[in-house]
Amino acid sequence: MNIKIIEIPKISDPRGNLGVIEKDCIPYAVKRVYYLYDVPSDAFRGGHAHKEQQEFLIALSGSFEVVLDDGKTKQHVMLNKPNKGLLIPTGIWRELDNFSSGAVCLVLASDEFDEVDYIRDYNEFLLSKKA
Image (cartoon, rainbow, N blue to C red; front, side, top):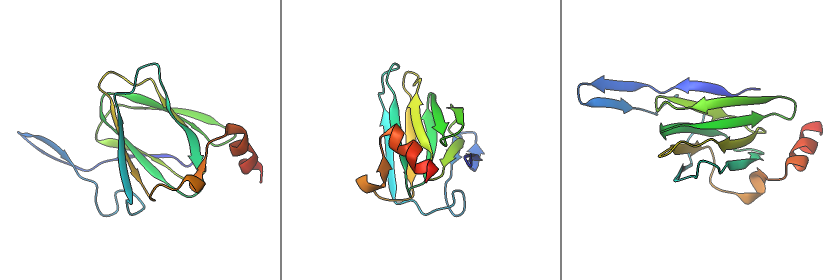
């Protein structure tokens, strides 16, 4: 699975830390930014894959788990540090769950929203991996 944890450059001083995402921090130009918050601890988000879009997820506050599936292998990644992000390439099924109280998930996407790019049915996803 070609996922990657990327350390976000930071500038530190006595007033606190500043995380910086620019230049070549992630391998694409950001075309959409959104964030998840107030997610109940027993709820999950995601439940889809993208045909073309890449995403970079950051736990700005709190923590949550990302379950990644390439059709053969599942991998669990806990995000809980605002200076580390998870790069998810195309063709990976993802589910986000186990949100802590106050968790905020920031997503930097490579494309604007396009429903055609989503695979929302898991069986369809598995079929797409066999093609």
